[in-house]
Image 1 (spheres, protein in one colour):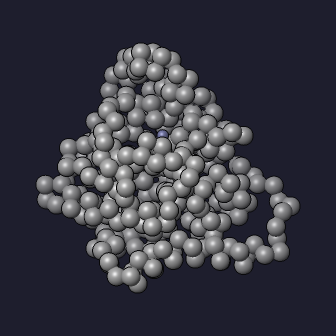
Image 2 (image 1 turned 90 degrees about the horizontal axis):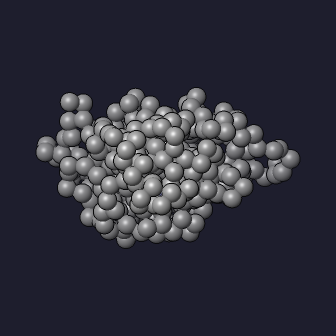
Length: 302
Ligand SMILES: [Zn+2]
């Protein structure tokens, strides 16, 4: 079952788990404010790193960051920041889901939503084995002014090594974007350490579904052969089209797993807690209906 409890008590429990960490952190932080400069190359996601991240994570409390249990992987960004993951696994897991946030560094709510969903997954992982990568592009998010691209100026969501990448991204960038520097696909397919890391994670984890979180188009996009979800919270299905080098394009066409792309309404203002929970529940309902159905198996290992 995936968050099927419709009781008031169940909902309160879900909402509560988004706040509990705050009290814990407040108690632990008492009396040790200031002083320690955050080490951006630190391995563990400790309190200093969280303090560094939090101003860029709207809707995320200090406690939620600290209790996220993110672990370094050895993967690093262009500027050497660790790339973190965490797994949440139900003993009854029947599907593997990879959630990726913070691909574009100026979409602050994206990384925030991934962390808030992670907390909900801890509370109830349902029938899934989750892997969260809440912040794929830390250099972009933590830049003096947050930027979409990584530290090499590459749009990571155009750098995935999709079929015919060189021709299609060139066409896309030069004609469709008129060489918009914010959408530069990079010098070569999969040239960036962050995209290489994501590809490695996809290969190792072998997900049945990838959820890619963005902002601010306020819609839901879907790549794959399954019937798509029609809504997540107030986001409704509205297909954006195909973008060469994107995670959606790579996941669905190269790796043959469905990709749900969440485009939040705002890049800076986070969705409410109620909305966050509703999106999570809608995602779970769709997963149960489509990924677990006999016809829903994607056969991605074929
Ligand atoms: Zn984006």
